[in-house]
Every structure is written in C-alpha cells, then in structure tokens.
Length: 235
Image 1: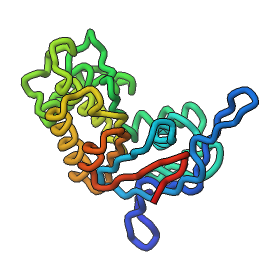
Image 2: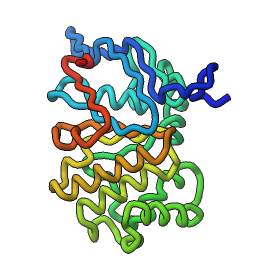
Image 3: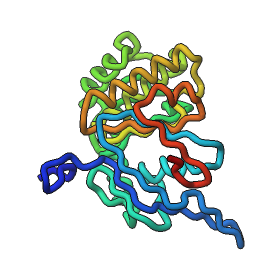
Image 4: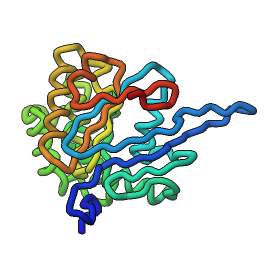
C-alpha cells in the first residue's frame, strides 16, 4: 500500500502536522517561532502562507522541507515522519521529495539553463549529460524551449525564475516549496509565475505546492491561504 493511502483506501494528506513547536534560544531568552501549529494539506493544491514579518512563516516552510526540526510536535510529509531525522536522512528526504524555489533564484552563473535544471541529478551521482533530455523537457514545459543554452546573465528575472521552477521538478518531488517566488518580479511576470505554479499543483493529485509570500495579490491566486501570526495558524 502506498504511504499516502490510508487503510480505508482514502488518500492521506501530503502534510500532516500536530502541535508543532519551534523554539530558538538567544542567550537567556527563548523565542517561540511556532506555537502549536496543526496542518493537514492534501496534494493537488497550491497553498500560500502569509503573515507579518517574524510571524513564523519561513520557520514553518523550513520544517516542511526538513531544513529545520521542530522542538516538539509531529510532522509527516509524503508519508515520512520528519521529527528526529538525522542529517543524512534529512538530506536524502530533501533531495528526493522536495523541490525548492527561492526569491533570488540561486542559479549557478557559469552554467547554462539546462545545466542548472539538471544540477540536482549531478548531486545524486548522475551525469549532467544523462540528465539533459529531462532538463530540456522541463525547460520546454515552463516555456523556455529557446533558452536552453543561455546562462543566467542572458535571462530576464522571470526567465531565471522559470529555470528555478524547472530545477525544482527534476527529481519529481511530492512537495514544492517556494519562498517569495515573485518578490523580485514585476506584476505581469509574477502573475505568469503564479499561474505556472498553480498548474504544477493541479496537474497531479500527489503533488503539493506551498508558497510563502508577503504579497496579498499573490496569495489570492492560490487555492488556500494559511495565515500565521505569533507562531500560530489563524483560522
């Protein structure tokens, strides 16, 4: 039985979290970035996380992607319990099950578009050349069939973000996490990127796209808006 199918034959949520707490110690002071967060997020959905600066949005995103560990609570993503994962296990989870998209693109300037897309395969001990057909196909999917061999300095901001989106898909992840993906784009280009992210979420019932954003217009383009304030999800 698939890890995402319940004993009753129902599809389990891709993200299941209960009473997530994340505390950070600063000298004698303890800051609670997350304060008892509960979440159930199914696949096939484009979700945004909004809230004021310091509310806990990025902390929640990092825990979803196994970049950070909760201080207490339970979280299961794509059937994998993330609480207590060791460094090697967390790295394996991130590499195979999570796609990351960042505000500043994080492309390698000396690599072409297709090489940037194929890079996760190289980190997975595959050759870039072997991964090239898949990388090119993903670039075609995001509308960059004519920019395959261009380097980042030859691309616009919107094109670079599309390369980053294609790269996030190369390992066929169950969850795609986007941190302010439209933050450096003009409104028209940002709208096109949001439409692309929605398509990626809706194309497959077993994939979830989660975006952190300060932009109310961007959040309005998603299927579900989760508001975080003072480390709690506001209903």
